[in-house]
Image 1 (tube, rainbow, N blue to C red):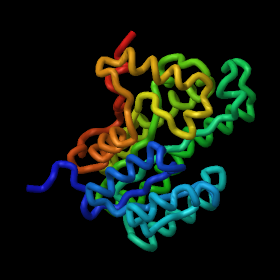
Image 2: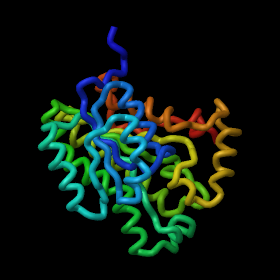
Image 3: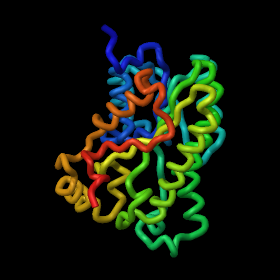
Length: 259
């Protein structure tokens, strides 16, 4: 009997892996275990060194530089995917950035340049990735795009600042692109994990307290793990999730439902 989550024969792009604790690491492992052939990107040479153990463990052959502030690198990645595979079945967007002052400061004090940079890297990069992926997903007969968001999109999270606005825009982009691409069989979804300690989260002041509060308030009294996020994402990009699109899907032990 074929497993429900079966990605055999599918080719997937995974972005945003920084180290072993990254959300994208859990996603890559889940997709690889389900049989997908993966393409992994890295932001710079320093990041490449940190992801080498993951690349070797998962047997990934296609590893490319992708810095979303440099359009030439995105062009190069998708040109390589087309040349090597001729199609793409799914792509995972897991990238976000804001300057420290804009992250920890008041939204009303955010700088124009800082706001523009945060929105470009955290939100519009998903739109650009979707545009580049669209023809390759069409060649596969349709496919799936998934981005990573957070509850700060709809609730005020201390020290999350301008990133909350970026995540709200990211979720809106998910809905609009799902509507625009659905006729081509392309699904677009967002996964919203509960708080977990990643390199990005370590830059948020008071994050340890946020995680402790999540364990206390969540109905299941547990913290999410990269493996939990990977399992949900693997479902969304699989044929089992073939009619799931345009949604924000929480994996947070129920934390988001509590007042």
